[in-house]
Length: 106
Image (cartoon, rainbow, N blue to C red; front, side, top):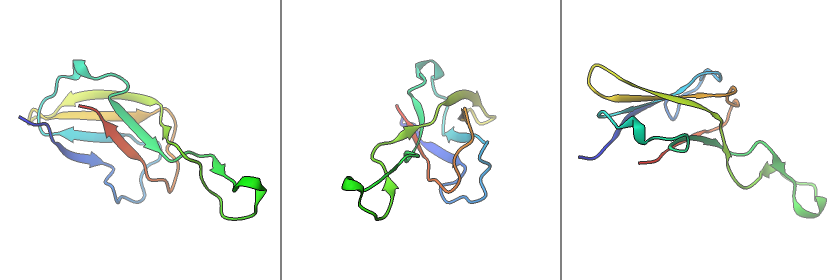
């Protein structure tokens, strides 16, 4: 039996998201939460530090290469349908107008 993700909140195209809020993932079945570690559930975003063109040339400022991983804690619960709900609570507010990515290992 394969494990599927039923929903992720906030939704991928959501606007007006509470920046101090959590990311909630609902799986289609109960999972063995003892197999999860801090590296099993990651929230990432483009880095905050902008890069300036080599040689100090004046031009567009673009995000630096790489990824910032958001520190935080996660917890698990079961709903009435025996589906696991994973909640990630960032240690600090998320940045506005930034697309975050949820990475979940198997």
